[in-house]
Image (cartoon, rainbow, N blue to C red; front, side):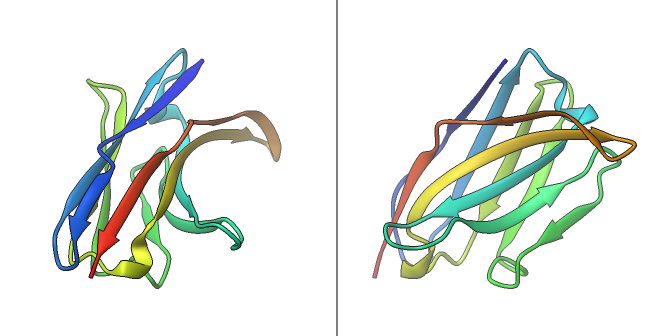
Length: 119
């Protein structure tokens, strides 16, 4: 099983980036996929999630600026980030998790992609 993030990079404040999380070995449409981010010296921070039924959820810091979506044909999840701020600078990770009857069937992480926002 592999989750591969891509799409990170450098962007000026106010700009946009789209992160991708491509999976092999599991079907993301059967999973809840989360995006998290981490900056040095800080706890890992939840950003957004999309459930197997397509329900989405966002952290307050992401709501209104970020959009999570899924392409079942490509087995990928995306995080469209707009109106980027310097505080969005972080390594972004995707996580795919599946639970059934309160039992975690799997919980996989990607290697992360760096997003740097310059003000």
